[in-house]
Image (cartoon, rainbow, N blue to C red; front, side):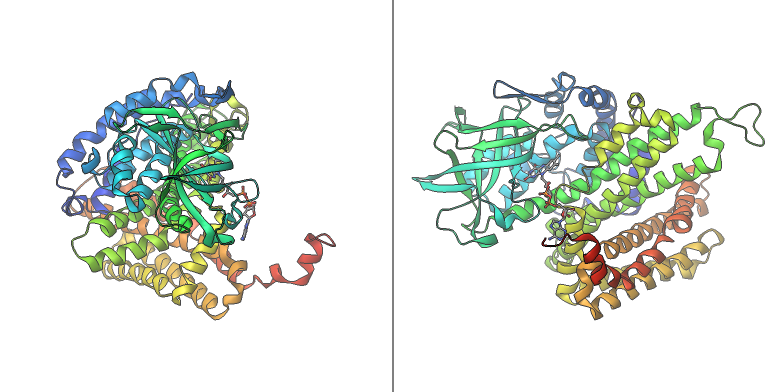
Length: 595
Ligand SMILES: Cc1cc2nc3c(=O)[nH]c(=O)nc-3n(C[C@H](O)[C@H](O)[C@H](O)COP(=O)(O)OP(=O)(O)OC[C@H]3O[C@@H](n4cnc5c(N)ncnc54)[C@H](O)[C@@H]3O)c2cc1C
């Protein structure tokens, strides 16, 4: 099985040059998160995830979770690992200090999350869902709920889940049927939820479910949905664990990937009703849940980056060892890494991964500024930026992860298709990413509809303007090595502008062109950020550095420009020629008579 090494140099370069971490940590609230502190803790994190968590990836994949006597049994490979992670404080790094967290910026937490996700994607979902619950409770919970639940959720002693989906309510949550009936100071919740990630397990002492449900007299549709907190074990007045609540897992799915994560069917209220507490205003549950989902969507986007990184590391190692064929200049049979087509695949894997990582870190840094910047106006601008970027990070990075992990299999040849190298596991694990937390089809509609058309394209124009600012910088420099940046960035900007003009002029086409529109912007923004990193690398070279790492940054951007950004032409053409999809003939071809 492949080893995993945290890409610390790459991440540090992003923190220094894209985020400007020394300034970032000067924002109010980050007093204890200085650059020196971060430099001290990240190598410790790398050691933990490389040595303790990464080796669990394969055995946990081969021993999926199962249900036994109403208990969810997770892989023995994970036993004790979660507890070590909690004790080391890796779950609570960005948690509010008021509730026992370390209070680090989200960008630092993202570094830790990437290591965890690369080390074991299915396992990483356990703290990820908990963070979503923390986020929702921090925004909408009462003071008493925050005091009772946040300390143990932030430390990781308790975990959290998100219960939206029901058999008839997937992408369309307006069909949620789970009921909540008022009963004294609480509600009695009953109904069935499906596909609930880490819905039940014994890694944490308690599981705190956030559940979407309706009151009996609630309006139909989205307006009548409220959010409830339903603990697995009720909490006594002194904070200790009390009686078992009326909620349990009644099934654990058999699935394509992420086998270490139990995906549960949850039954609420089979014995009279699970005790639940309202979170946020009545009938505003979807709004509250979306605050949690937006957070989770960014996390899922980065899962795409992380699984891509792991697949790339594995493919790179394999291609240096596997010997096949001859290559001019190499004596005897050559390691396959010397074949141009294998180089193409490896570079494609690394360029897509680096582009996604840059976009994800850029967005999370904006999230930090939206919460901590001293200027309220800057906070608002950054909150808007996060809104626009969220579907791109989720959609583009996870689409890229399917390509990267599939290339990882291809680099291995037949050894990729059989299970024993683990390359296939990365591909199977990545396949969920475009599906959950809102399918990528829904992300595309969100980007084009809510994030673009709703404000007449103003927010998206801001993104185009910031790309133009980089173009001015690079055009002014015209260093030999960076000349390519100017041309390709200029092209990408005009393609984005053309697509935006087209969509604004033909809003009735929006849902038809949404996917290609999302991919065009994801591609262009990833490239723009890689270009910024290439400029920073050139600066280091100009200052006299001969570190090959900086040349690698420039060649990644060049490779992206020449081999990936060129897809923009196809996205743009597909957008302006999309009427074929809405034509009558396609309906005749696809839709059965009477359907
Ligand atoms: C492993 C796993 C873990 C999960 N974890 C959780 C969890 O923890 N909590 C939870 O609540 N849920 C969870 N889910 C559920 C997940 O979020 C849903 O599967 C997802 O939202 C899609 O819903 P669906 O499966 O019903 O697909 P559907 O909604 O039936 O969608 C099927 C297809 O139709 C498309 N489609 C649907 N509506 C539209 C539309 N309006 N416009 C365009 N296209 C559309 C979709 O994009 C998709 O391609 C999980 C699912 C899985 C498989």
